[in-house]
Image 1 (cartoon, rainbow, N blue to C red):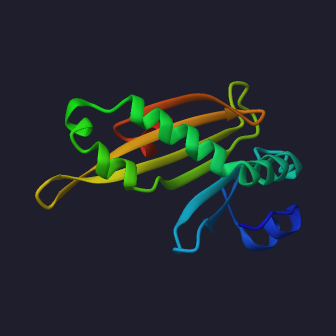
Image 2 (image 1 turned 45 degrees about the vertical axis):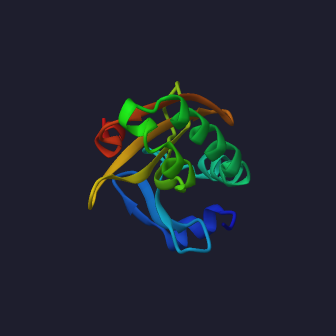
Length: 150
């Protein structure tokens, strides 16, 4: 992943309701996540750019911690699928960098998908909040996207 500058953001991102938005490819497999940079009314991107660039430098560390958290929260049926679950990669869906939240500055929404029964699949959704480069909370959610919109 490439680092961002405010010029790249203004040139390449869409501005939607006080947030800059773009899809960011984060690995060689072509996987991408939705990136939202909430700038509010003042549209000062300097802080969000700095936070994002720090996030991508430390992304693997965050993903390792999130994977460790997932292992500690397996339900009984998920424990039966532990080998499969541990082999599955964590998929990042959304990264949101806020401008005005006192509790966190970044949210990462990610998931793991596994075979549940026959052809059916099930997701483990995770919402992680980060403040000043440290994970503050990690929560398992049934619907991470709806939780993030609140």
